Image (cartoon, rainbow, N blue to C red; front, side):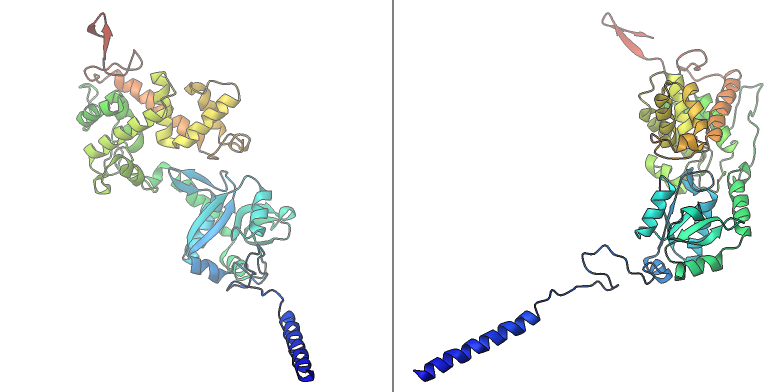
Length: 403
């Protein structure tokens, strides 16, 4: 009996000791990621989390900026603005691609950089608004405004400071001005009228006449637009990649089924442009009046569909007629100023509105000139004197008449 009691006591002590030891090891295990953060934690390690080597390994430099003529905007499908172009040069120096995230204000840029959502703020931020962030790389001559990084002593800050030279801002601005000039387009300038007395606009008139019905436009209007785009040079090429008589972008060619190998073929280039114009016509089906719609389509061909829609939204907001070009033109120009391109209804930011407004004006003026010299195609009348669509049959008393 005594022996049984001692055995039970021994087992009790043994089990208690085991429970005590197990309790000592009962603290939850902390699982960490390979870069040192706790799994499930949103914290960012302090030791240069987004180092230069990380950026090069990932192959991408992420910058935050704001829309504006000096910072960032899209022009013919390409990024522009001095701050953007400088960021592009720095990314090229690192051998990585560039990704741009547009923010609505300085506070958003600062917050997102602090939260580790980007590598650089590529915008001239005043020191007073930099919070705990460090200024590095691009800055103004006073040193009071410049780009921001999260760690002033990190590899990225050192690389930026070693790369940037004060003269780079002026040189980049000079480069941008050249890209925006007509001198950046490689083309020969031909006469706007091949034979005025004979009513011949260009050597491509038959192609304009053949494919204008795709766009449901007068062929002379297509010719006027073509001269504005390329001065009738089939080999014209812009720095942005626009090609041929109608300056078709490669992405637009893909959209309308034109092989990139055929971008400089005059006939195929004109056909592709007419298909694209037809697509834009469809996107402006809410603009019921034909001449008004033509102006909106021309503006979109030059400045981009979404910018034109932004101007229409502004016109509506400020009590104007968003389907009337004269009203919308005012806001096309307005999108060059912060008051308008920072408006909440604007989705695509700054645009070079004066270029687009002048583009529409010049084509309309040249079309008026062509209309007085060259004959329209059968079935078309100019929009200066009536409908620009082919005559169509309408049903009346069970018979069809030409209207």
